[in-house]
Image 1: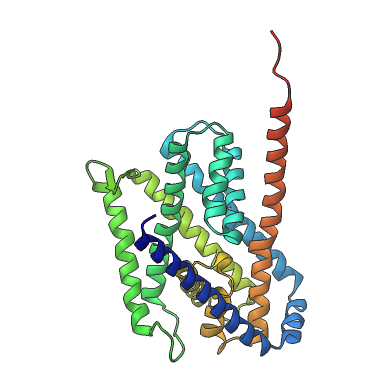
Image 2: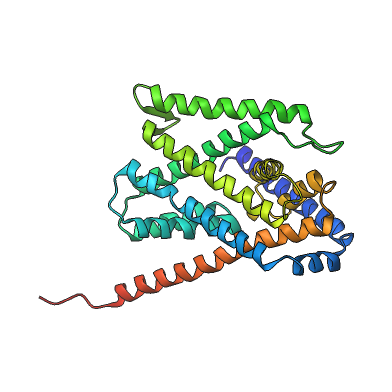
Amino acid sequence: MRPRHRSRAWLLRALAVAFFAALAYFGWRYARHVAWYEVWRALAATPTSTLLAAAALSAASHAMYSSFDLLGRAYTGHHLGTGAVMRITFISYAFNLNLGSLVGGVALRLRLYARQGLSYLTITRILTLSIVTNWVGYLALAGLVLTLAPPEPPPGWALSGASLHLLGPLMLATAFAYGAACVSARPRRVRIRRHVFRLPSPALLRGQLALSCANWALMGALLYVLLQGQVPYVTVLAVLLVASIAGVITHVPANLGVLEAVFVALLSQRVPEPQLLAALLAFRAIYYLVPLGVATLLYLAQETRAATSASRPAPTS
């Protein structure tokens, strides 16, 4: 590595360490002033029916996301069955949510799909389409919500109300540009540096928008249910979408601390803080931790089956 590249890599690592140290410090300072007894009391007072509805919405969202790679199957033409594809996508998504995209989104997908006999080129195309599906739906839905009903940011926030109004149409324009390219581009191939990306067909584009928008909408519905209707659904969805892009910018695994900070900043004037934090804790448990536990069991079962198959002696002729 060249000296300039080494110094740049060292600087980036130092900045990352400084950022996470600052995040931990401010999180610790904030946590010191939270009345945690009231938060736990609010969490314990959450009706069972609310938790069951939230669990159903979480299951629906994970099933929706697990269907993303079915679009990848249509896109690449590989041979795997629906159950195998959705199982691999579910495992990858649960690990992605909790441990970051390199572990879940990339490493696990590569390992699990390669075990099923797919080539790395095919897996890369599936992964690329899945990422694009997630974010084109996000851009379309967030653009619409932030254009029509942006959340009102608190004083001194980095993004003003005017900035959110401008961000919405920009997101919509980006999603529209992608859609227009899928519908009208000839040839249907885009070169990005050394990589060639084949644009999806209009039918696949419709599937991308439908699945991704539905998934984000279900996540918003889950939080709306946990907040027990104290905030309009569109407002909850808008805050979730803002928090999600903030988590991407900061690269914090599981959006840890970022999700809470954005919701507290934007909704603490409408919802008592203990109830707001209780809803967010329930959201993390239902949407992040429970699926991670299920995905871990499924992954270990697949690894066990693979190890058992590998240890069996080859049949003699």
